[in-house]
Image 1 (tube, one colour):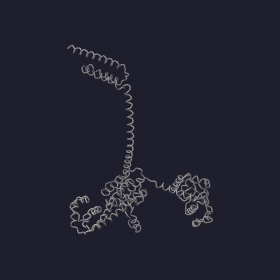
Image 2 (cartoon, helix red, strand yellow):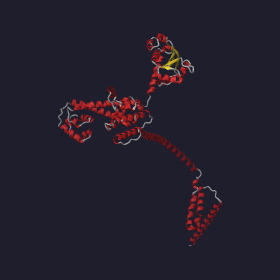
Image 3 (cartoon, helix red, strand yellow):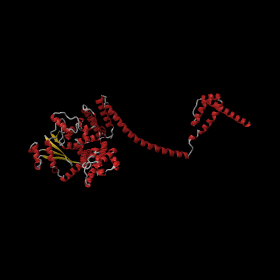
Image 4 (cartoon, rainbow, N blue to C red):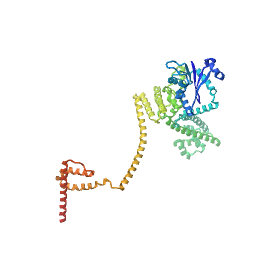
Length: 551
């Protein structure tokens, strides 16, 4: 069976035919010995076809496809054009040797070309790679090196593309530095205590905190200079006025020896270094909190910033932590105890880094293993949400924390916890509501802008109408004046006009609307009667006026 070799280089795809294997032997050792000698290896392999890449972008796309185990259309066309054609229903009389087994399986699924990837094929491809510039005439070694360098840079740049706000490498470095600072500050503080205790040994028993002790050592300097006037300043440092008085009294009756001014200056400088390191440690912790809230908000709200950062740093990255099953996450950090237990056939550890969580310390000794397993399960869920979710939210972490709290109550009091399905449904609904509220805020701002534009247009149109003819709304004012005069006549003659109220109202409606309405014949007689009644009332008014004038 003939053997063909597919070689992917930085400059293009190439196909080789291994035809002279009988001369060197068909085993791996024989090929390995003949690789370095071009005269021998040139008799084994010959170039069949070469397809250069059209551009650097095309080379990057092809390289990405090969690294992911995919076959592109360009590679498929290249193989179908240059390999022998297969007859339908019959086995192929050749096989294709590839370096990547995933690419070989993809080629076989799509084109039915039999592929193989073993140590023998890899040795042949190693020889092809070594003498590749000799097989192609127009290709210079310098050109090949430039193509490899350019493709390597572009491929690395594409793989390293990430969101700047979600760089877990910064968290890994920060937690390592935080642990180192804790050890160094502890060591330096003990050195300050031991050094300054030669001068003021009673201060060690009064002050337990290392940071406050270093500040006092820098402030006090010489104990003989302490007087009652220094009590307010000491109280500001210590935070307790009684302790400040106790320090002043202890300085008066101290058993320590006197130090020279140079020795005291060195103690002060070293104490200042410890103070600066402690303050920098606080700032670094604040930085770690903000980064963890950006990178893994759900894991942070579930288990805390420091424990979450230690899990990420131990796993290597957030994506690696998300790939870990909960059983691995549970014992992450206790690998030595695990392998020792496997070797001695003892009990395996129940927890690793998650032991520093407050949940496990709150659980009873009987339930520590159970709550550790449950907490590891929730941590794996939170890490996967943080790694693969595009929405930066803490809702899922809060709900998972509530579940762990309910599980603790279940172990202690027997209260049944909620089901995970119900909790996750509630978390999804709240997350979607928050996202919709953000969208609604954006929509409301757009609507406000549109409404303001419409109001401006209406004002302009009204001003234009005011300059021209009067509007129709001014006409019904006369009708209102007539209607106000008519109720006076109604008060005097309620009995006569009691039956005639409905026609009058209909008359007002027609006048106010400004448009006459079609009425039936029966209503026309009522309207005429109304007209007669109105004429009678006007005549009576005139008679009354003449009587008043005569009087």
